[in-house]
Image (cartoon, rainbow, N blue to C red; front, side, top):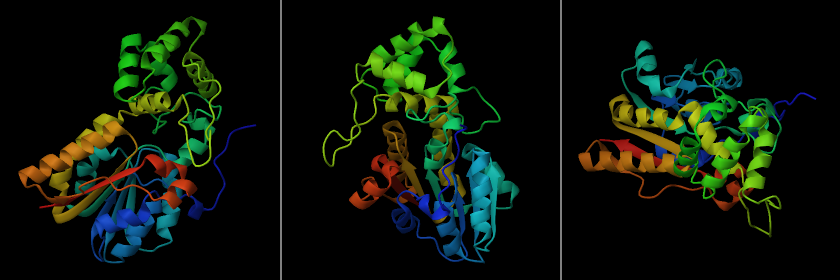
Length: 311
């Protein structure tokens, strides 16, 4: 049977930290807002509603499939918006072409969406069998399978350690490279099984006891591989460089990260900007999801929101 998108109503695709994002950005009627990762428009719809008919929203997403749903949801609101199948690293050129010199609010919800994980065809999930793809934009770039076929053991070990914070990076990299003579990695569950065997974690359970979650043994490897495939760290670095020049004075930015390396980049950029006077205020600590949201929406458990206000 062919894997499919989960067919739940739009409202069930919860936007992570929605109320916290709105509190950080404070969108006002007539403002121009940018959603760098529009997804199915969970955040974007609320932002567009608040800027009203005199405001405007510009959305970006690398995943063309997401934009189909986003356009429908945003069109129903009836306020001006545009969405682009594009990398947010190039947003300055896109908004410039639309006649926008600077914006009032900017949001970037990094990483992958629950819809992408639910679709086994995308290859993001270590528990759903599918082709080992992991590309956000399936029209270009190398798949995860192709990356694993050529990357050296040392490069892979370094990526797992530095990007994935994987304590078993040596064992996993060695096992992946050693298995190459058997053919290229093609399926997500085959890779996940090898990782579990390499780390001797075949007895893993998500909930070993009440109110306790344990990360899947393959989670960090899949995350690191996805970040490599999509050049996510480089894209974030470019966004952070551009950000001061595309925010109006007093404009606000909010960035949600799900990976410690991403959070470190955001924290450092905002801190340096505050010291230089580029930003007049930043979040002292990352904003985290409350217990109810973490229970109802597993994606929110690792979410960290940081915000900055332009000087």
